[in-house]
Length: 298
Image 1 (cartoon, rainbow, N blue to C red):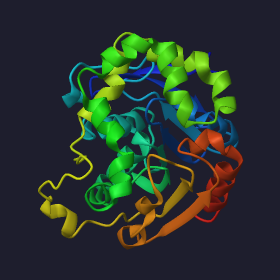
Image 2 (image 1 turned 90 degrees about the vertical axis):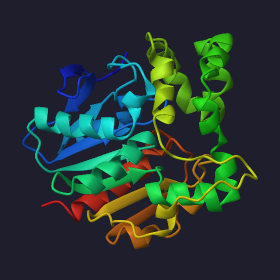
Image 3 (image 1 turned 45 degrees about the vertical axis):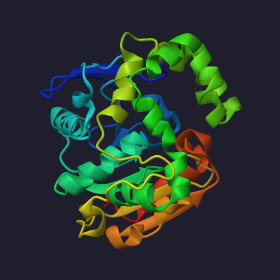
């Protein structure tokens, strides 16, 4: 069903991950991190393309598909998948690498890059917000706050009852499929439904939101403002490519405003796509990545 052979790898972080691995280990390594509610399949067009001259690694992150699903939202706080990432690189004998992330995988990539400059040599982000800008816009940008109210819904402990009432196929058809290109999604429908139907999968995926400390105020609410939003924030020191699908209705263009002050070596490429840019416009994504890497690898 996957199209890629998966290795089931046990990590010292206490989880076992299914991992797609392609290409020659002697080539420069690229590690790809997917987001919600997906899997390594997010990167199906990139893995095939870059395996030609890179060593490509794409795990199903904890909580997704057939990877481990530890119980409790505390097991999905961002430090846990960051730990998985570094442990996976260690397991595969990868030293420094280029990290590529989308959605939640991109959020983890921002954090991993900030915390591990000796391991992550280059950073590629696709429609995933920088942690400071995201939290700041949730306070200061009413449109982004409104667009992020789904996070509050996902944190509701009764959300699984809503999914159960719809059924997994119904949840796909009536919610997820409404937020992406239906024609592009259709060939992947059975894969999504199979992955979401694994025991505990829906709760585990939602726990990424429940385990996050991001504050999502309600529209019109005026909560206390965290002091760190207006204090100094460490820069991302790696060369960074941000690819942004301009049709994203969940993460608005305000996520790009002020990014250059936080990422000194920044390249931004805007493309015609929605939120799921890796497979909504793979030609533009692959071209942008290849051009950017060509100028920085060597």
